[in-house]
Image 1 (tube, rainbow, N blue to C red):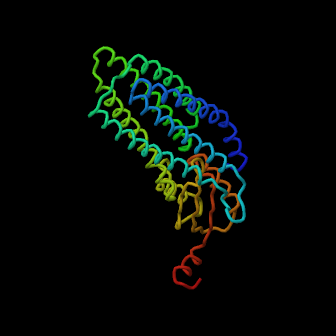
Image 2 (cartoon, rainbow, N blue to C red):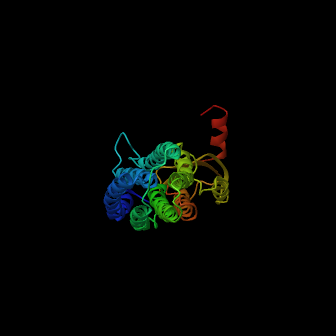
Image 3 (cartoon, rainbow, N blue to C red):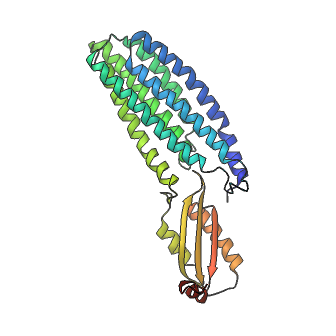
Length: 299
């Protein structure tokens, strides 16, 4: 089972990644805004807006990782683990706001196109490919098990792809002289961001409502519990995410035997952790008589 020490270890393992990624992207946002205004490139400014949202997203994810590692209190008995889920949700919302702003400005550019220096676009966006790919790599190992880290990874991986698109736009503008390619590439950027954000938005909203994590099949969990020796029934089964890395379960098991419950509890804990990645488990045993009395309103 994971505990506060595990959270602290996970947070410390990503401290350098978050710090480096934030610093690197702040510098790059400044470069993109400066040259975007200098050469009238909406694609560069759009990419800068996306990168700025990524900086905010990284800060949110970093802060949530820290809060999740804090010690529980008498008023917050689970601590602040849920903050990682809220961070992932806010990350998705920030991206959607950035998408709206970029879309409005890109549409405006169609009606009043301005000269664009394609060579400068290519150089600045080329730097962006390196910056974003490097930052994304820092989070690649944790993205499968933590949607908070996945949010950070998706932002940076999408940015690397977006920067590659801006390089392509700069090259095409140099070759063809078609200024409308700049806002077109901006709208392609919007589509790429939307697609990468949608799953993050769905998953984070799903977990914020205490729904069952998508990687867990409730039917399989119930079948396992019913397969335990002496267990004849399962009810009040609840599974929810405490954070983006920890899952909790509570259940009432109807058992014919009152012997070896402690050993059975240990076996259940180990099996649920190894087979379903459920770490926090609360089991209540009931005999059939007690269950019938409860259902008849006598207890």
